[in-house]
Amino acid sequence: MSTENLPQSPEQAPRKPRVAVVFGGRSSEHGISVVTAGAVLSAIDRTKYDVLPIGITQDGRWALTADEPERMAIVDRKQPNVEQLAESDEGGVVLPVDPANREVVYNEPGSVPKALGEVDVVFPMLHGPYGEDGTLQGLLELSGVPYVGSGVLASAVGQDKDYMKRVFTSFGLKVGPYVVIRPREWQRDQAAARKKIVDFAGEHGWPLFVKPARAGSSFGITKVDDLSGLDEAIEEAQRHDPKIIVEALLRGREIECGVLEFEDGPRASVPAEIPPVQSHAFYDFEAKYIDAADGIVPAPLTEEQTAEVRRLAVEAFEAASCEGLVRADFFLTEDGEFVINEINTMPGFTPISMYPRMWRETGVGYAELVDRLIQAALRRSTGLR
Image (cartoon, rainbow, N blue to C red; front, side, top):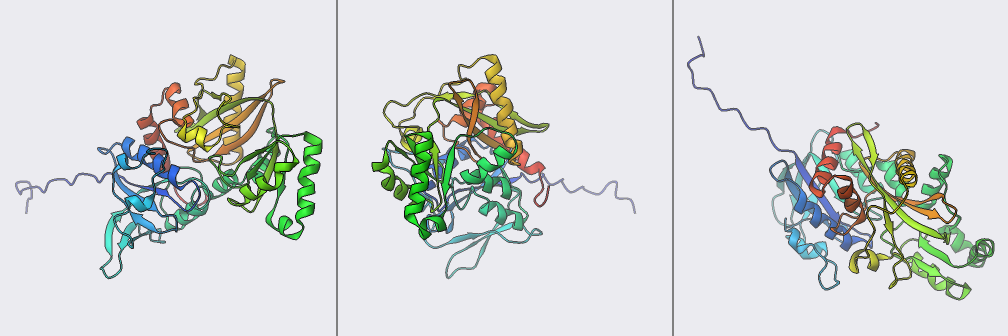
């Protein structure tokens, strides 16, 4: 029997890729993660992608949240939080730990679980521990869900300033002088650990910067001018991380450079310079996100210096096996040498953040930047690669 004259069923339109934007989290950077996610939610092309916002509360609950970016901004110097955005005080979103099933489920006590549909890619806008450090990336690897940004190893290395510097050194990148105090070292003999720092100061001079080894956004960092402020600085750093790192002052200019993964590999943006902030001891959280310290984009460097820092930024990206994006932070010392301070595998994406500003100056606008990151994640598989 011929089917030529039978009515044909209309072709079903292809489903748009579904992006789960995950934000908040258990770290001290919870609030700025919410702000960053708000900017990303505003920029995602809704004609091209479906979006599912998922907020992680400060106690670790995965909450279904409203898709309302306008409620995710700093207002009167106060940061937003996931609890304000959650649709329920008790309900939780569950990712299946099954590579064959990408359907997300919402559970609420006393109710039948609700299927929220499949997720094709996760955009993890999490900063600091329990999100940027490889923990969430490991969960997504187990679930078989592609995600924006670096994998487990690079995320962990990028979060731990100690091992980050070790990796850079092994690849021939120059780092500044530092010393690390590990938790067991401090617990075993505080006097010996403190003497280790004092001896370091004797060799490299004051001031020193005492930092949590695994935190970002300048939380818990203290500039210590002499011995009298050391104990208080150690205590402040250990509020964020029992492992601390102490760095010597490097005299020079602060230069940043963004790296973005294109179809043909990673490329570097034009660099930016962070000028001295007169109202702050250094470029801390308040200067970055509250008082909006102005970075200079592009940085006033020579052509040779610009080319060199862009080369080094990509080299750092490759050394740590990064994917997707990185912001690499350098010091240009008084003798004209670039020293890498750190990388950030999930840099801030707020409207005033340096990473999108550098790429905008390079010719990649905010919406295109977000799209390129999603597309790069969709091109990659999970697992060993």
